[in-house]
Length: 271
Image 1 (cartoon, rainbow, N blue to C red):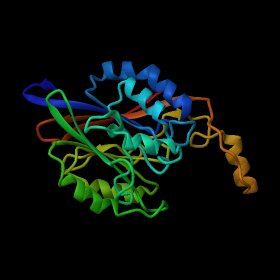
Image 2 (cartoon, rainbow, N blue to C red; image 1 turned 90 degrees about the horizontal axis):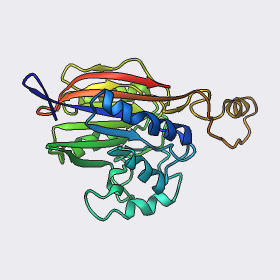
Image 3 (cartoon, rainbow, N blue to C red; image 1 turned 180 degrees about the vertical axis):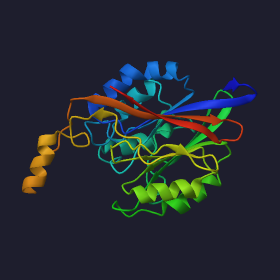
Image 4 (cartoon, one colour; image 1 turned 30 degrees about the vertical axis):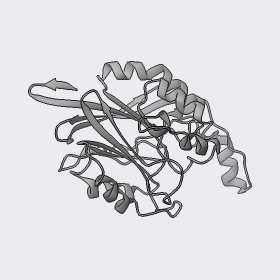
């Protein structure tokens, strides 16, 4: 995409879990500047909480694509809005917008949607894989072996993986397992950004959790008083998205487009 000295390189922006209208709004406001300031080539975002904190709808997915997001990943909330099933099934070609919305690849075979997208930006081919962990989460197929299967199908050198998982250990293990085989492995789901970004020895950029893009005057996006009440009384509570202290959390990965190896990974937090 660009030339630095004699090495072609590509810059990827990954935006952490977009939570409700506050998250969507800050992405709309700040994404153009991020793309310009960091010379971004490819934009990926986790959008599973885009609809008021729970799920994503087809119109919201289309809105995010129109903002310049190339691929949207999800996780355990992907089915919260049932209309997303019809959207997945509406895909009418390999590059249909519905193909660029992913659900975890290690869900039961035959479910709507796909867990991998392969595309191009200019002359560069890339692949995005979406996986979900199993520790403290629903029992799905083994993400390690599913990753192995998917990588056999990938022809691109630039490969980006979103592992939507609860356990830090599971995310770290996957990072080491895929080191040298993918460009980047980033964690999502906990909505809390971690400060352990690094490039692993064989060239895979890694961070345990990118963090949430949404309201931080909250408990992981939900109005804090509702969550406190839930812990105090242990009674059913209707969760609502908070609105205060909105931040955009992301990472920028700089990679060699000819080998797929990451050169750097940088955390970004904007308010």
